[in-house]
Amino acid sequence: MELVSPGIGLIFWMTLGFGIVLFILKKFAWKPILKSLKDREDNIEDALNAANKAREEMKQLQFDNEALLKEAKEERDAILRDARKVKESIIEESKTKANEEANRIIESAKESIENEKMAAVTELKNQLANLSIEVAEKILRAELSEDKKQKEYVQKLIEDVNFN
Image 1: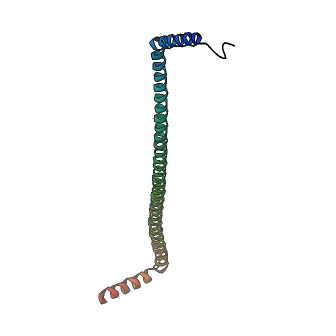
Image 2: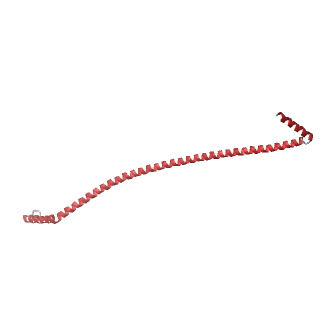
Image 3: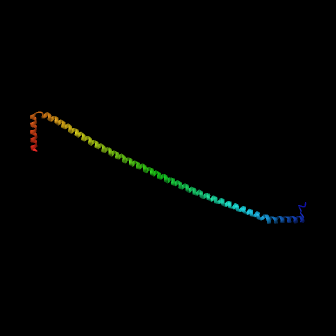
């Protein structure tokens, strides 16, 4: 029952023991404990700051990534537009060249046809002239086979020459 109603000696010795423990703790343990608590608090604060900084950097990187992605999409679209323009210009140029080549071939064919036509007409005229000469020669031979007819024909030619 002494614990329920302690005596003065017990209180004295308990206070003295508590004071000694408190003094020893203050002398040897309190500073290192407070220092380790302070270090732990600083470490936690640094870790929180680092986490916040990392979070901000992640946000910035995300914005940068979005900007880069947007820029890449715009660049891709620009490249595709340029490619379409180049494709269309190549197609248009090819069509133009094909039309020019077709026109050149047509003109060449027309010229060739005209040349062949002229050659055929000339050949036909030559053949017609040869046939005419042959027919005239045969007719003259038949007409002038006799001496009398020859003399009459020469006389007629002389008269025609005199009048001209």
